[in-house]
Image 1 (cartoon, rainbow, N blue to C red):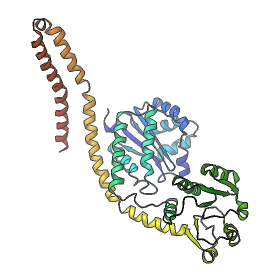
Image 2 (cartoon, helix red, strand yellow; image 1 turned 90 degrees about the vertical axis):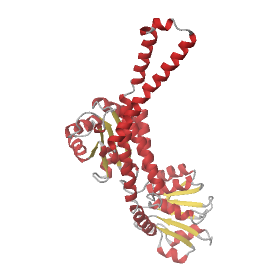
Image 3 (cartoon, rainbow, N blue to C red; image 1 turned 60 degrees about the vertical axis):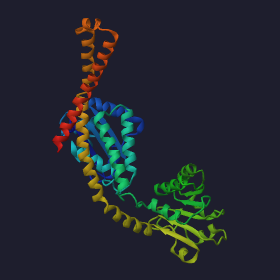
Length: 412
């Protein structure tokens, strides 16, 4: 395995590009094997890993070449042949480049979620693991990236176990679900989903995952309502038909882009169908979809985006307070990786020793001392073979132990 100076990461995040620009670097899963394999060959890379999330794209690779602007121009031109030169130049210069131990530290920081748009989001550890598994299955990775990712996952697990970085939810969707769960709502409650955008899609999947089963979805574009309803095993409706819905409800989850209140007093009263039991309305829209007068007039538990955002901000403060603790864990992990890498370098450098020792043993037994061995009785020969076998094992293990001890002394 080459030294750590051959390890590099080029990272594109919300810090150096817009989310849309980062998205241009995404490669569909079905195309990754061909395109990344061709890139590895064209750039003569020893190893390669590709990570792509909704707001992050990173390339981790191992090469003995100098990674400069000329290298990066060729890199992005090879991987994205449809890009115009000005776009290739943009990505070549906009990416954050990390090399050697800095690359290791960056990988640890990313998986520990203190580099994310939302600090403490645990999803990144799964995304890193999946990115490695995918790259490994495509035969793009090797020994250095393997031990890097293994150590990264171990460190991230330690971070999430020993700190409070991910303890308090901060996403509006997650907080909305936690608030709903606290109300002990029955799983067969009648749920109306008003709007089929990303927020409501995520909220609905939360509900389905935790066992809720009774969904009706309303949206201006019927096809979107139909798609979400199919995912939920529910029924789709046009938003214009909301005022005609006559099956009652227990929960309304609403998030539309309307400038006016979608849930007016008239529509809300119609939806109640004469029921007087307490209802729950989760309004995640900005501006809100629920007319304020409904909150005063009807028996309703209102969970608004303003309340959720206040909770989110408080939780983010608590998470931010944990960053120093996470950085201490990352610092210790970085030191550990230096030792892991050095030991592995020695192991790989000495992996031919066992075969060499076996070859020496074979020569001694079958050629050099062939005549002497032929005069020995069976018992003597058996004892000799045990002695030689014992020495063979020691000759294989002692140099490795000594090399590791030397490394440890150098670090001290």
